[in-house]
Image (cartoon, rainbow, N blue to C red; front, side, top):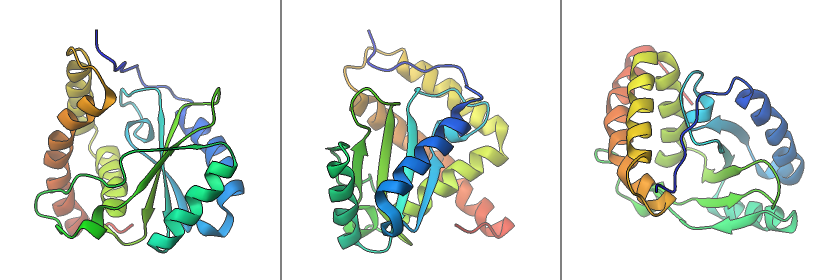
Length: 187
């Protein structure tokens, strides 16, 4: 039995994000430069795990730790990893991939809150990936089908699922970079 459940798209995910983003903003205040809905639940019509992925962008690595302290004080829980996987063709510098991951307080709406530094490769990746899928529904549909098939495998953890998914995301991201350049997309 797989540890992953991919569900049909839910038209209320955007509203759920809005409500959750306000809670996060109330906790982080000016520590967060921006709060964005990322991941599959941010792409209309895309099947996903029923977990909101949200990215809070901060100015510096010190602010990552400050944000974590504020969230922990509000009963959020810090989780691994402390970095994202490096993407082929993007900077290999470890600092480009540093992040913090926290999850919601117990008995609340499932959220993965990714804290990343403004201007770093991983912060840009999450936003460009989302916007590219929003602009390319056929690619999003193919990605959704991959996720359903991957989730049906006998995976024992979300980590195994993420490891399987990462190279596929990178294959989508590489043409997304070309699209961003061609269209003038910016963060």
